[in-house]
Amino acid sequence: MGMKGYGAKPNEKKVKELQQFLLSAEPGTVLQEPGFTSTSWTGGSKVLGNNDIEWEFVAGKGVKMFPGWLSANASEGEGLLPPNQRYMIIGAKKVGKTVRVKALLLPTLI
Image (cartoon, rainbow, N blue to C red; front, side):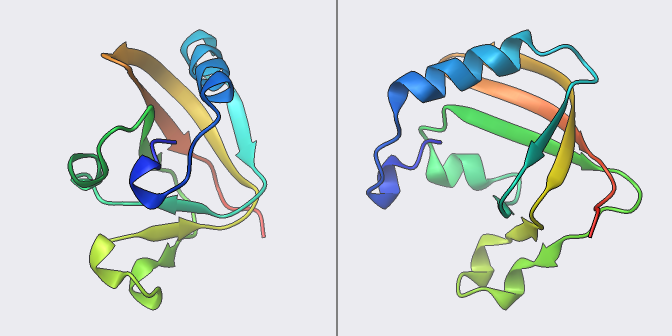
């Protein structure tokens, strides 16, 4: 979401639907991402800006992450979560137009 600076145009309707889902999700709701998840350091939101959804992840025991220094953009401080990573929602709130989600990364199943 919020990838306007990269030339991609997000589907606004789907972004709004996802925001509504995240805001209404009960704490303890578990989501699973079928693909890789690219993360960035805390200051990433200041650089990328215009993010419609921001995640704050807390890594639980057994979470595996691929280091970003292996990528072409090592300076981003990126970490890649493997496919099928599961997140447990702790809470979500709307700040301006951005939905901020706090989630616990559950153990990696590979």
